[in-house]
Image (cartoon, rainbow, N blue to C red; front, side, top):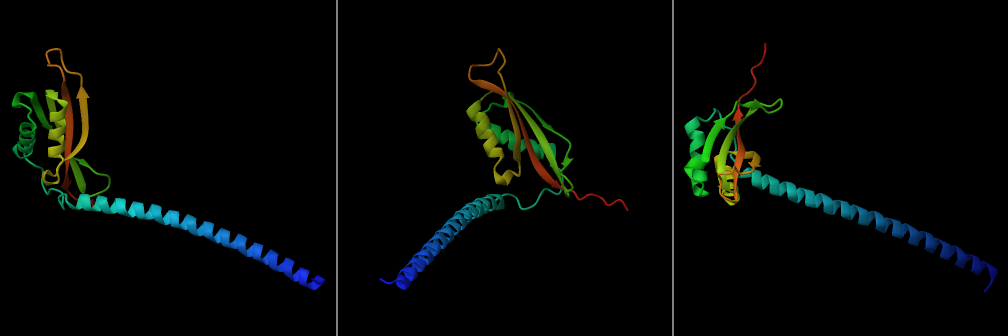
Length: 173
């Protein structure tokens, strides 16, 4: 082989090496983009499930506050369905509505106090009241150690449920 042929061969090998490195870099960039797209797809699917779940809830907030009987009836029914005796439902206490940020909505919390109830019954009741058709959301749950006169395996609980009210702010003109 003559000298010119060797030079061409070396140049060709160097060019092949450069193209191989460029191809590997392109492949790595494409792999990173595919992984990013897979993450975005997972996020979109999660948001889609959230939208489907929220779509089942009441479309609008209440236009007026619920009366005490209108609010306590579903709570008492859920407690009864969960197997909680009426004497263990100590108090249902509606609280003042509070504005949600700078929106036209207010959140109306209601505290429910129960004594000497089994944990499974409490969860069953909370789950039933959190169903979309009730319009209530469980905001907090506080369990306390049962009193001395309680049977073993029971708890006292304070549950806070809330629903939304549509009440636009009055303009200050």
